[in-house]
Amino acid sequence: MRNIIIIGSRGYQYNYGGWETFVKEFVDNNHDDVKFYIPRLVDKKELDKKIEQIGKVEVNNIYVPKQGFVTMFTFTIKSFEYFVKYIEAKELKNTTIISLGCKIGPLMPKYYKKLHKLGVSIIMNPDGLEWKRDKWNWLIKQCFKISEKYSIKYCDAVVCDSKAIKKYIDDKYKKYNKPSYFIAYGAYLKEDKVSQETKQYLKNNFRTKVNDYYLVVARFVPENNLELIINEFIKSKTKKKLIIISNVEHNKYYNYLLEKTNFDRDNRIFLPGPIYDQELLREIRVGAFAYIHGHSAGGTNPSLLEALSTTDINILFNVEYNKEVGEKSTLYFSNKEGSLTKVINKLEQNKIIDRKKYGKMSKQRIKDEYTWDVVERKYRVLFNDLGDIDE
Image (cartoon, rainbow, N blue to C red; front, side, top):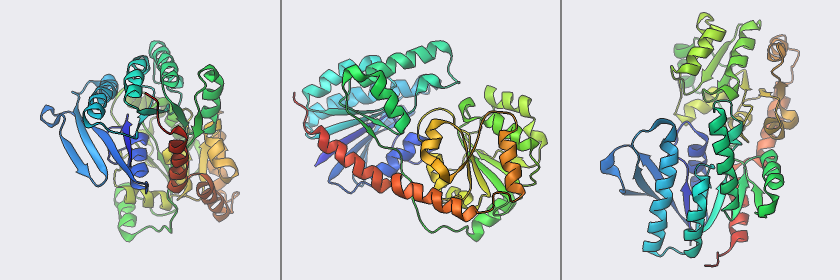
């Protein structure tokens, strides 16, 4: 039996975040002889070190008081410290750690040495290129660059969720000679319909109906281009709604958006906050007239895969990460003024009429590259390649 420890998400749970989605789906879709160990972030001291067994998953509670930006860094450090001791105490064999994100790079040499002595292999998934994100200042970006370097150097294999990031890692860190693998997230393909309950939900909450709204599912950060999307939508001629499902917080970025776009004055635009009910969210995707994906940083985004598996027309921001996923099955827009407005107006005028053709192509992209079965098969190859780590 293989033991797999996944560090870097908030735990084994559905949450409004890519890592949590990955962990839940990766575990639930794994059919091998595996036991999973997943630390869960808790902010109540009395829960610290308590263990809960959920099927083949051992959930290990780790207490970290709320520290804002640095919470996940502290949590990751404490998770590594916890499992170094745990592996040694339990004498776990055939163990692999999957580390999500380059959070604590400068500390990785210490853990790499300790874990190798215990025969443990480390897989690093750097996610996107964190130092490229607009939300960070110059100093933090430099810290992320350093962390990325150490994270890649002190691991046994690198998993990249996009081909573009794999190429970057291979070129940038060629001297470390680390094997790298392209393994993206997954999505489900199934016969979808919008239930009466969801139709009523759309009517009650957004004053809209099936096929009468554009949809965005994205975190509330600058690199997801919400300002651009809102401004372009406001200028369009559509009478349809724009529903932006996000972790809306009345923070500086929210106030900035409000000041720059005046979206509160347009009764077509709704920002309801996050929706954690996955079935409801899927049906809202199915019912959308079109999905708009504004992500410009990072790699393959789970919300994009979910959109391609459900929504016929998908409109993506034209960057390499999105183009390698959508290829010819989607429409594209740029940050050039009027670009997205033009696409929306064409759709409204029925100048892009073969919706089902686009929907069929996008679902074929998921089937070919991005189902959870594909993800599981690729990880199985990776685990076999790793073999045992010499002490």
